[in-house]
Length: 249
Image 1 (cartoon, helix red, strand yellow):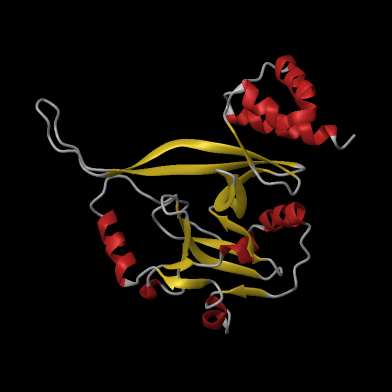
Image 2 (cartoon, one colour):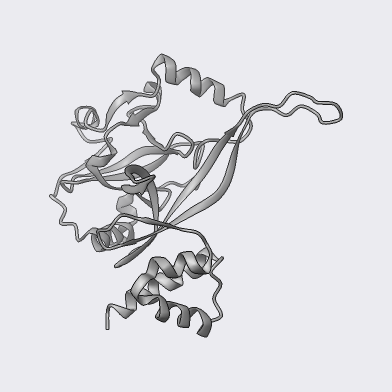
């Protein structure tokens, strides 16, 4: 995390990104934690306090587990934009990947709180990264998760970080014991076309081309002509950009 964290006011390009993505017309109401009504407005953000007894005990346990469940351990000034286009600026945010929860602070002394109503927000900006809380189909039912939006357009490229908890292992013969740990696994990638649900794609030829459906031949030709790899996430972004250009013509 950058030590010289700046307000979103000092990063107007991020606002332009948001306006472009969602065609948002901001209501003119911008709330910061320095705002006179911040404490009252902050009540809208959460249903649960992360410092409640049960959750706090889990926070304590994190100190005895190797690795981290968080995108970044420290809180960073972030931005929230609600469905009715109210912007909350300078909100200290932290993303718990393992629990798939966005935490925030009203004041450092209060301890972390959990955004309990993420479906009321369009976007979350954290460490110059754009997140959204979206529904996708999992085992034939809709499930809501946080996604990082890594490319916008008619075809969006989404990413999910994956952290798992690994139980401690007892010593067995010549195999030594190992402590409990949070272990980062391979990122998951999704494509979202328009307002349809995100579709997970394996970084494999068939999975990606099936997702592009009617444009699969054009995408396959683009990959071959430009010597791209289906296994490379950066090349997946290039495919999405090319797909979007096809619809601009």
